[in-house]
Amino acid sequence: MKDLLIVANWKSNKTSKDTLNFFEKFALSPDFPTNIKVVICPSYLSVPTASAFVKEKNLNLEIGVQNISPFEVGAYTGEVAAELAREFATYAIIGHSERRKNFGETDQMLADKVSLCLGFGLTPIFCVPNAETAIPEQVKIVAYEPIEAIGTGEPDTPENAEKVGEKIRQNHPGVEKVLYGGSVIADNVDSFVKMPGIDGVLVGGASLTAESFLMLINKC
Ligand code: PGA
Image (tube, rainbow, N blue to C red):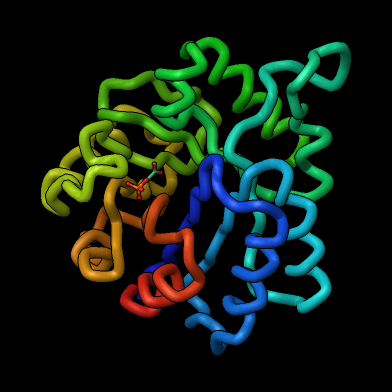
């Protein structure tokens, strides 16, 4: 069985109390198969809560952040530098289309963020809306997320996701894993992860309750 990476992107949802409730339910589930690695990316304010819970209960889970500052530590009001995120997280989602669109993130800014992640020991999960999007050379994990599939209930077809994944690998030989994201739910996850070139999924809405996210993981 191939290794799978299942990433939860909670976006701007959940108080720290909601986060704790989620993890308390999630922790009751039996261990996942060893080929499955799960990364949960809460909002920044819940990251320390999530990280402490995972450590205390020794859960087989990684914590990620949804973004980092394009700068190092210093006088950048409102930003969280990679060096600070690293205290609680091991992964960082970089270049999500919601950030490209709503926060004006440019290819250069995203390349800087990838360098900062790697410099401070965070593994970037680099999101692209299509195979033509620039991908910084050091990136090893790419999430293909077509914009029209995000949060719409209208996922891409697994066959097209596979094709896009192939193109990404052809154009970027350093890429080791391609994930698919966009309206992934328990009922369709299997159709994506069974494609030979898809190494996992990035999940928004269906990761927000422990029940729906566990159901999805169990269908992989
Ligand atoms: P969705 O979001 O699963 O709610 O479509 C995916 C994402 O934006 O990462």
